[in-house]
Image (tube, rainbow, N blue to C red; front, side, top):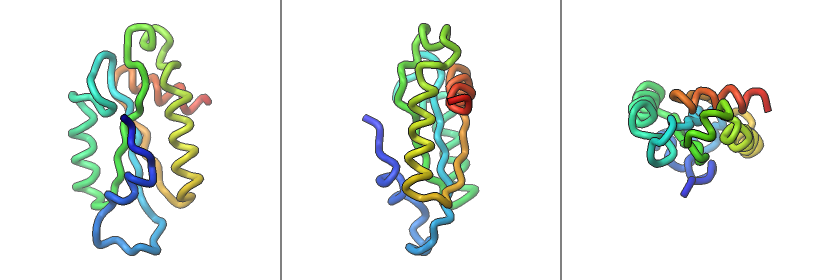
Length: 116
């Protein structure tokens, strides 16, 4: 089950000021047939690297059907879901910097979300 953005914000760097709204969030849709929401090939490593390099990056996978039909739809099955997550994140914390990335079909989901 996908975590909501508020829960992810609680996992941000421990020594960051509570009043600081300057945060970074990475939304990442996985590739076709990968398990979970981040997948296993690119997502977890990217997430670890972002957290290590920024010290304050919240990471969330995109829960969408990463199947052959979604691939044929050029990521259209996940794009609206990702666009909704971006909107939710920015409504809850307008100063959040959003990183969008995806692997294979996930990259097409990003493209679809940006066109939503």
